[in-house]
Length: 98
Image (cartoon, rainbow, N blue to C red; front, side):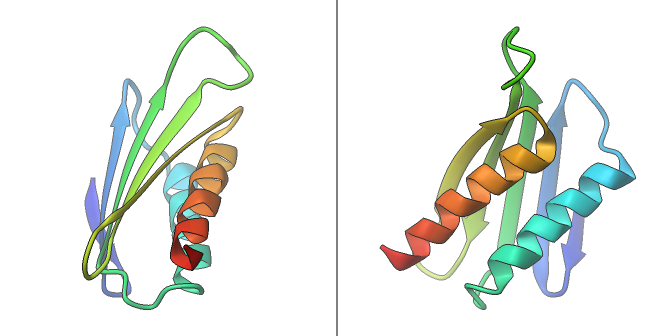
């Protein structure tokens, strides 16, 4: 699924399931949180997948952030999509500082 939020091109890929309105809202919410720290974002690619048999940490989120220069990448896991998005978002935010 590809769409745009503000001027940011978003590519949301879900493996093995279809995205819901709630999931899209969670992705946009986390992206907007990251946008407060960085204003030159041009693209965001999200890859969401359920992995393994561990029911408490089986949501995998891979997030690539397109910015001028080198793109940033982070991966997060959690018991829910929101937790995985937050974990990956926190890792991206730390890369802004470094």
